[in-house]
Length: 361
Image (cartoon, rainbow, N blue to C red; front, side):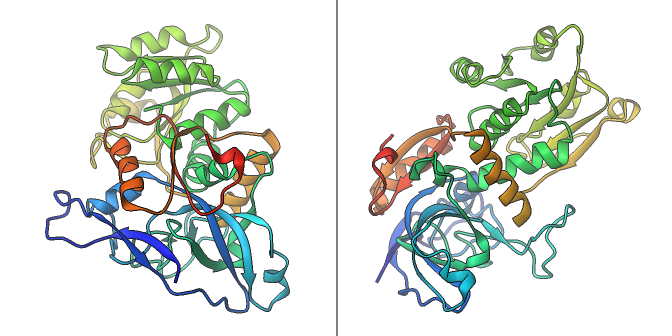
């Protein structure tokens, strides 16, 4: 039977517990009419996987493979033509189901179901094989290795919606601030915005991460640990456009109080996460300047296709921080330490089975 890695239950309160990993076996897949069996070659971590281990994510479950990002080869299909046309192709998997194309949010009455580690969806990509509907895959961009292809689905989709759909400022010449550079989503926002011709600025608590962001096309960056960092950032903005059009943020905290000093009237703060605090003040100064705060989570099937095509057309290569090989607990566990310590710059990837030679980054 195929192997996978899941979390093992131990006693502990949500937020205080840290569930250990365990290697499990999963049933040998038998595809239905419109389904695909995918032999996975690589999978990648996201922050939600760390939250699942801490029981800080809705529907946390045991005995279900972790991870939502994956790439692999279609090795078997159901009987339908729509499924059989994928046989032998290298595909990336849409990390969530129940959301077709509505700009507002998931249409499914049972909600959006993300792969990996919860009772909402019994499948995950930290496994040798996965079964999915034929409608939920895209052909992996040919210019990407398996490692790179595994790195973009969830984080890329989150970044795409936060920048293109919610911020409304993925336009050449606009000034966009990306906070907390180094994580997967923030780096994709940077890469997508640069590819669109935006002037991108970044914040980080690490000078090294700021330097690397500039190498990727950022116009400049500031250390948010410094007192008055917003004034330093303002001095970096172009004289002909001395304000931000949008902020794409994954931290929350004081982003409104800092951002209102930098944004144009009617500027947008697009927030895809709140890692600093689950609460955030909305100030009267923001009201008076017509600042908008827009929440953004994941994205639709249509947005997943749009994002994948953009990566293909612009030849964007995801930034990978670290790669390990093999479905073993002692191999995978250190990647979670990287995430806990916020030491990564880019995605954390596990290769599975036989991965292509260029995956060995």
